[in-house]
Image 1 (cartoon, one colour):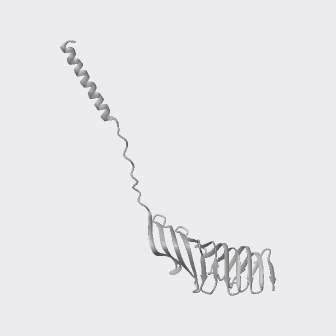
Image 2 (cartoon, rainbow, N blue to C red):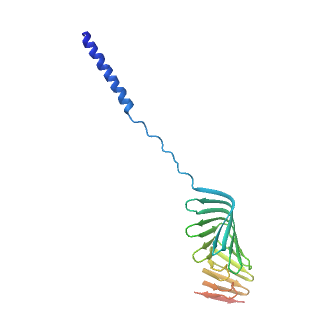
Image 3 (spheres, rainbow, N blue to C red):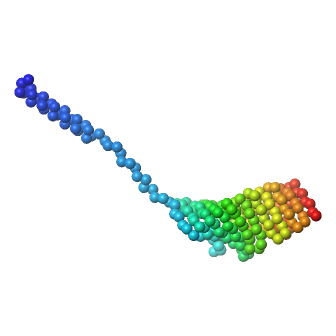
Amino acid sequence: MSKKGKILTGIAIVLFLALVVWAVRSVPGAPPAQQDTDPSHVMSYDGNTISEEKNGRKIWELTADHIEMDMETKNASMTGITGHFYEEDGRVVDVVAKKATYDAQTKNVTIEDGIEITTSDGASLKSDQLLWTADDETLTAKGNAYVAKDDMQASGGSISSSNGFKKIEIDDHVYIVKGDMQATGDKLESDDGIEKIRLIGHAHITKG
């Protein structure tokens, strides 16, 4: 090969290598991993209390061993519950339970697991759940509901009240014992803490 040919060959090789290097350097690298920059919206509190007021009157309060609150929705879940529901006539419904949830949009409260309920006028209740419905300010003991006061015991699927279990309704397979009287029915109503009762639907009463 002539000297000129060697020079041209060398130039061609250099240009080829430069092209290869440029191509390698021009290949885009893998995109950087996306970092999850969304902060946690859940705040935790120990030994704190949440409450609800209406027209300057405290309606209820729940104190919990532990509270987790979503700071966006303001919904809360709680464990180790001690609660109080305050009636306008001064009576109080007290409740202890293992857990509860609060819905900030509806302002409803669901309490469950190991529920024990007492009222300041002497009634005691148990149920699978205790529901506070804010719209009509109603407490409902739901699921295997049981209430006792003085010489009266009653049970049913649910026991609801809008005034701290003085005026009550018991639904679903009602059974009541009061003194020497026993009764069953589809529904029971009372306006005075079971002093006087109304049984509705398939009522059956025995005495003595």
